[in-house]
Length: 364
Image 1 (cartoon, rainbow, N blue to C red):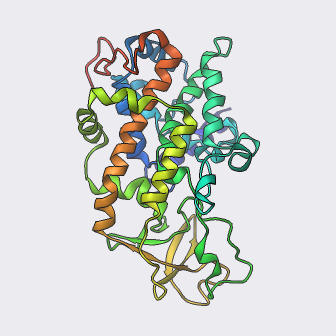
Image 2 (image 1 turned 90 degrees about the horizontal axis):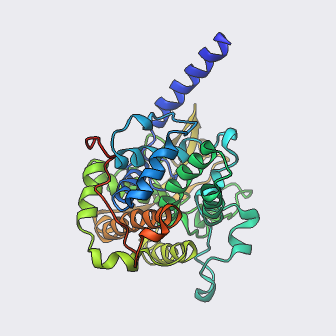
Image 3 (image 1 turned 60 degrees about the vertical axis):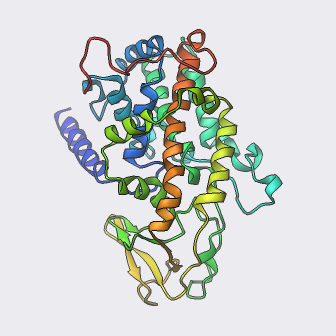
């Protein structure tokens, strides 16, 4: 048992260190985005919902990030908001990687450009069905407290995910037909912009390979503000017009996904022309990818991409969209949880919100 414990602890430390280096992986909002959504949500939970959640989190069986040590509810929510990305490939929690998004094609006729379960969520593997699955667990008092606590953490993350527009949409992989490619490479979709390679504000790569469109929306636009997640959440929350909260919070999960899809079509995917002279591919190097200028030998077997150049104008036109989606994600997450834990305490979309602090503790 000692050897097992030592190996487990070493693996835990290694995985924790790795996760601390993941600001630009294309996994929904990046770390800061999810933390911002969580902090905003915490500020709009009723007192009854806060108490229920705090009691539930005591039973949380996988507190790898030591979220229980946080002294305020908004800090706890910021902490647990990133957990689902950390376990997306962990078999102990099921096959959750496909549950972070829903692939709705943007290239179909406008009348069909909406969520269709039979087309977009085969076998229930998408964020929309995942939210319903974990909602059912969370409301079921016969389930163990630990199971319900895990369901809560998935919900906190997945509501955030679906408000990142590129988690509700995908386009053709236009680079699949590039003449430099191996003929075996075919168009299987651009994976929500992951296969649209870009230069971002002059930067060609991050530590995980080439910058891509999805990573720009996950992290690039948020990082450019150069604010802590706490300061950013406070700023966005302070800008909320209380009179507009009921309108923002109304609707279904499907309606929210279709709304985000529209933003992907009208904003995320509004791109300049590809530069056919700027060719790159991503090559494996140890446990990561390296962004490499096109060379026939180096790129053999890998898809060759023609890059899009995204500049300050792209950032400036889309920053308001990102900030609105972070705000909506937080407010709608609060509504989702208030409807579960305190439905009678919410009138016209308003929760009996408090500061988000844990009773009796100072804000972290």
